[in-house]
Amino acid sequence: MALYEYVCRTHGAFEILRRLGEAPPDTACPVCGGAAPRVMSAPALVTGRRAALFAAIEGAEKSRHEPEVVTSLPPSGAPRRQVRMTPELWKLPRP
Image 1: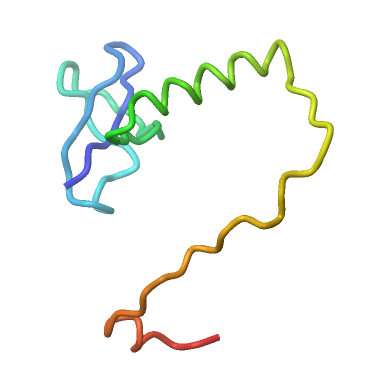
Image 2: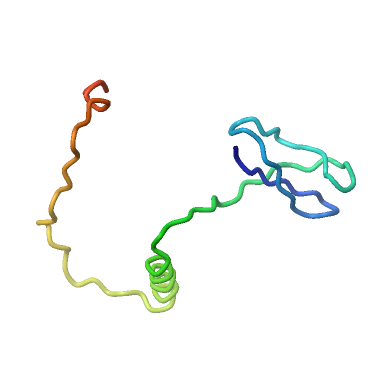
């Protein structure tokens, strides 16, 4: 199930819970019954790293006014992450 957001010109935004992909492009306002078009909004993502999220937001805000000057390239010796092959992945086509 997914939450879809609609906006009535008179009564503002409201949400409807529907199956994924089954939301109509517009629906009736629950208050006045007028046509309300669907609007796209940012998804609500929940992660366990709130401190990292706030640090990223703070860094982005700071770089808006005080951009960081880069004087060299990052090191190229970053370790590569290896993915373990599971039986489900073995069945996928190879490029």
